[in-house]
Each structure stands twice: as C-alpha cells, then as structure tokens.
Amino acid sequence: MRIRLILAAISLGLASPQLAPRAIAQAAPAEPVFTAQGIKAHVDFLADDLLEGRNAGTRGHEIAARYVATRFEALGLKPGGPDGSWYQQVALGDFALDDARPPSLSVGATRFANGDAVLIGPSPSFGNTEQKVAGAAMFAGYGLDSDYQGLDVTGKFAVVLTGVPHGLTGEATYAAEREDKAAIAGRHGAIGLLYLVGPDPRGFSWSGAADYYLRAQTAWLGPANTPYGVDPGLRIGGYGNSAVARALFAGAPMTADQMFEAAARPGPLKGFALKPRLTMARTSKVRIVHSPNVIGILPGSDPALASEYVMLSAHLDHEGTDPNLPGLDKIYNGAMDNAAGVATMLEAARAFAESGRPPRRSILFVALTAEEDGLLGSEYLAHYPVTGAGKVVADVNLDMPILLYDFKDVVAFGAEHSTLGPIVARAAARMGVTLSADPMPEEQFFVRSDHYSFVKAGVPSVFLMTGFANGGEKAFRNFLATHYHKVSDQPGQAFDWQAGAKFAQINYLIAREIADGAEAPRWYEGNPYGDRFAPGQPRAPRPVVKP
Image (cartoon, rainbow, N blue to C red; front, side):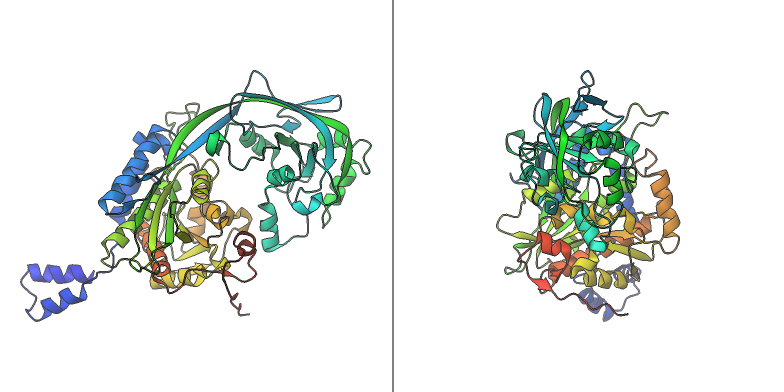
C-alpha cells in the first residue's frame, strides 16, 4: 500500500528528490500484497465447467494439474516430482462389486443377503476376483489391539463391535477411533473381519454406511499394484446388524442382546469363541488409473536448514460428474472445496517467490490428488516423500475455507498439539484475527483432511478454518447444508474474495514464520498424536493453561 502511494506521487511529479531515494530503500524487500482478484482468478479457472469436477484420474483433473504446474513454473519454483517433473504419479485402483453375483454372508446354515442385514463392499485386491472365505469365528470386543489379549484368531473370522468403548474421553477417544481395526485383525492372524452394528450404534447410520460402503471404493496402489494398507492375511470383511449378531451368538457365553447391553456400559468387553461357522462371499472387479500430485519446491537459503521442508498442501480433486443427477447440471465444480484452498496455496507460493526474501527452510507446495477418495494422494506422498535426505518438519493444510464473509476469527485444527499453535496465533493477530476453539468437535475435522496423512508420518500439522464470528456460523452451516459436495458449489456463490486474500495472507505468515524460525515445530510432551506417530522426536513442554 505504501509502495503504491509513493509510485503514484512520483508519476505526478509531487515527490521531492530527497524523499524518493529513502522510499525506494524502505521498499526493498516489499511485504507481499494479496488481492481479491488473484484468489478469484484461480477459483474461476479451477471450478469452471470445462474441468468437469476435477475427479482424480480424469481429463479435468489433468487440466487442473497442468494449470498448477504452469503457475509453479512461472514463479520459478523447482519441479518436485521424483522424475524431475512437476508430477508424482499415484496409481489408483477403483474396486466395484459385480452386480451379477451379489455378496452374501452365512452364519451356519442361515444366509443373509447383502444390503439388508449385512454390508459387504468391494474387495481391495488386484484383479477381477471371486472370493469365498469360510472359518470359525471369535468375538474380540471392539477390535482394538488390547482386545486380542488371550485370544487366538489365527485362520478365523474376528467379530468386533463398531466404535470404541464407552467411558473414553477427549484425545483417548480420537486415538481409539483412528485405530485401523482391519490391520490389527490381520496382524493377529485373522482371515476375515465382521463388524457388528448394535441397536445403539452411536452415530452409525446403516443407510448412510450402505450408500458409501457398497459403492465403488478407491485405494492407492504400491509395487505390483498391491493396495496399500491391506493385510495380505485378511481376505474379506463386512458389517452385520443385530439379526446377524443373534445368529452368531447362539450358544455363546452371553447372548447378543446381553453383549449389546454390556457394550452400553463403560469399559472394554472380554472376547470368546463363537460356535457357528462364518462363510462370506463376494465377486469384485477393478479398474486402474493414474493421477498426479503436483509438487513445486522453493529451496531454502540457509545451508543448515535447507534440508528441512515446510509443506503447504491443498487437494486439487473434487467429485467429478454424475450423469444420473436430476436436472441439467451434472458437474460438481468444487469451488469452495477445494479450488479455494488451491488458490490460497498458489497465492502463498507467489508471495514467497516474489518477496525478495528467500526462506531459510525449503518450502514444498503441493496440490494433492484423490483426497475425496480417502486422503489417498497425501497418504502416497507421506509414504513416498520427495525430499530425498531431507524431511518435512510441518504441514500447513488448506482445505475448503468458507469465503462467504469477512471472517474475524479462525479455528486452527491441530494447533493445540504442537508449537505450531503460538505461530498460528501470532500470524492471525498480525491480521487482526483471533484464534477460536473448535466449534464443532463432534465433526473431528482434525482427522478428516490431508494433513492427517502427514500427522501419521510424525509431522506436526495445522489446518485453518474460517471461524464462526461475524456471521460465520450461519454461513458455514448453510454451506454445509446447501452446497457441500453438491453441484451448487460454484464460483457464482456470494464469495467474499477479499476474505480469500486475507486467508491466503494468514497462511503465508504462518508458513513464513515456520520457514524462518530458529527451530522446527515440535510436538508437546504427552500429546497422543506425537507419542503415537513420532516416538523419539524432540518434544516441547506442554503450555500451562491459565484458569
């Protein structure tokens, strides 16, 4: 602002000879300027109908990826792909059920059809496969690692409850809910896994689960097109309702109803053998596509710190098109989700590149693929980093900022877990914005976006959401109810583009302080995410909370 006024005065012949040299000296380096027009231009392109919803593996996503790569190139960034290009290609397997041969579950001689009493989804296995798995069954409580103590499920079905035990609170609940029960069952030797959904499922919607679980699933593929995270010993899995549970618990030490009553009380449940044998069958087919993460690098200027990378991530993909939708509009444009996040990342990249002040640490700018399919692009990048001998020390994730109002506060998911918290607070304060607590803890946003893939790799991470002050709650809840994952999420919404510029500047300031700080972010002592995913890393003292 100050620079523009000085230049305007010079052009009108009003600046004195003594003032002009001093003004030029003060203007180097200039503080980056963020504009509403810059954010709008990116969103308008990325959410245009021509990109057909940017679904991973489609032509529209390829165009979006090329757009981001050209922006990186224009800014003078270095290509960050493993082959010297801008792209890290991710192999994705789309798995679908064969409608001609629907899945089924048999408990002894009683057969249950798929969709009514059981949910058996597509197989996460390579190739067109027909599976029929039979064996004895063992009840293993909630399927957490501790629930298998004293049980032998080798070559058997593990039967577990959905959810976590009653009585857990706070972080313990979050940590338990993120346990990978399928991986745990596989490690203990199970050949199959059956989840039981009781009469009080605590948020589990059978119809909602059926809508998700029975449709095609996507997984990223490693060497030999093997799906990541699938235990080779665990061959099949599904869900069963109360009717299935009653058949399974016939002759057991307790009935299914008694077991569900016990599950309503705090504490774990002791496992035991079940008498009926289980037979689960399904036929599935797979289609393999490739879709890129787009990666640009701004090298650090400090030789002692340049091997440490600060990441700014935003997912590029959205939901594509659906020809079966009613009406004329079949395109999920994804303007807010997540063209707005990518625009934020691109403007932060521009600010770094044009600032005239190279960061001490290197910056990794990443447009991720397949977030909508289950954080797959970020999982792939976390598993196959592009930093060589270097390491990522922090991730600032940008996902679906609600840019419909002049926000006065932000919610920083993950800020309380590490020393990123004070950095976020200082950046927000510089912009006259306050830091608010999570207004919707029941949504568990911290574990639902791409940054969580890097948290699982031990990286302190933060993810900002525009807050509920100044009309934010109404705007946020209305967007979720009216436009989220709907074709109406388009650039024609009542965007506050200046709010977009402010959001980009806050995230730039966060990344700038991390990049130039004397030490890398650290997990707090005793933090469950740090303790679980980053053992051995240095810790910071947990801040004292004032009463």
